[in-house]
Length: 390
Ligand code: SF4
Image (cartoon, rainbow, N blue to C red; front, side, top):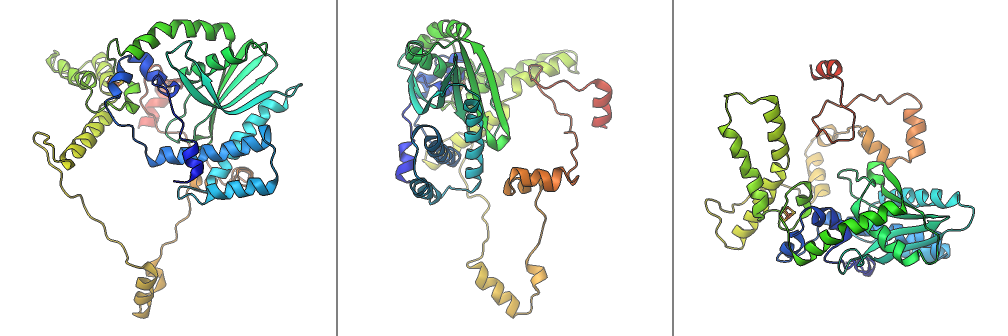
């Protein structure tokens, strides 16, 4: 691991802002998690590297003007990292451009802080975290969060992580700046998503007061275990009894009469079972780990998975094939890139002008999909839905 990556391994609080949607919903989870080792994965490390590149660009532009050669030298260090991909440059540009668009319209030069450590311990015991980019301009405090993940778009509206950062920043800066509004933004360039949300400061402060007793409970490890969507990133997700009991409660439905389920029962079962797949995956991962450690999981064992074959040296192997009369056409296949992949390799403007605007791209509606009633998308009206389904 390079020095630069190590620099960004941020220490985080027990009541971390990024896990706040979990501990606000399931207060005993943070103390339960303490029994489990913290792990990282390639995606997280990739995100850290992208953050480092973004941070460098932001510092150069906003807070630490540096010559082009210093910038290039620093950037080149990141480029040597094994997880570096060229697309990181494009996505961090989108992040920088978004922040520039906020500050450019301001009549007076704003205050900008990059990777700013913020304490929100007045609301959650020992709470602190790092804000990617904080801007104060006019009477508005802007809290900006860069997310490199490409799982699902995260919404800024009422986002507890950003609200905690905003509370901490307000406490730190309200003596210096007349902050009346708070604007939260989550920039997820890999999903083409920038989500923004603004609220008056009174709303934020009221929310802060409302979470104080919940945060104290979480800090003390008290309260009820409440499973839900937030279990996904909990370190206890495989062994948690409350989560297991939630899924075993599905068995209650088997006693229902008459023999066919009503639509209402189908809806209830789907709500209860929506996270069952990821729960079973977490259980399997845990059980495999235990088997490999030599611990017994009743009725299960670890076996060797299906192996794979690979060339010892592809160049040498192909040369050998050609020398033995095998035609090139049999050895290679040439397939066109998908629209999504091509968009990734081309510049945005190039993609638009050469393909979209020239009429080479056709957009079709997505297949009907089932979503919870709380989902922000509009429901498909029944006649369209029926024909699409056909
Ligand atoms: S797995 Fe879910 S229910 Fe269990 S402790 Fe974690 S967040 Fe709470």
